[in-house]
Amino acid sequence: MRKLKMHIALSLDGYAAAADGGFDWITYNEALEARSHALTADADTVVFGRVTYQGMQSYWPTVPDNPQSSPAEVRHARWLDRVTKVVVSRTLRQEETTWAGTLVLGDDFAARLDALKRQPGGDMVSFGSPSLVNACLAAGVVDELYVNLIPVILGVGQLLFRPQARKPLHLVEAAPMPGGVAALLYRPA
Image (cartoon, rainbow, N blue to C red; front, side):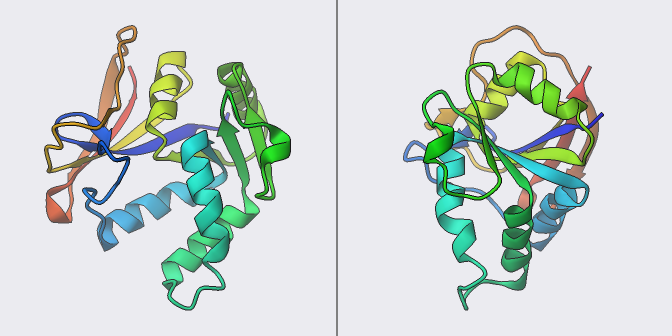
């Protein structure tokens, strides 16, 4: 069975996005980039929430033709172009998507994600989308949760974890990374 691997950056005080929605507080370097790209090695599907999808849809298709793009960005853009892109949204409609290979899931997203996990293919990965991570954890469809714990206290912003039933997780890996980041991997207990 395919796995759903979700990746998120988290401030020390539990925020996955700053109050303005920005991500300038996130530490990102070559070591963290390599760790993120390792998640895509055996993946053929990427899962987004609507907000993240719309941001990615407006950026990544432009990367291959941008002379300012790094080789790593071009590789990631080409990977995104060929994989299935799944969007979980109550408001976005399939006919509103313009990125080839996009599938929109609505209110029944958990059952549909579970059905996709049972199909043949590579793993499914998600980067960002704090609301989606929270919803998928609550629905019990996450197989692996990758958290980059960033050494910053934001004070305000979008909390990752909203009130929900207790979800025990098992720490599989804790790796110190450059820039003071703790790269954590959890699986459902």
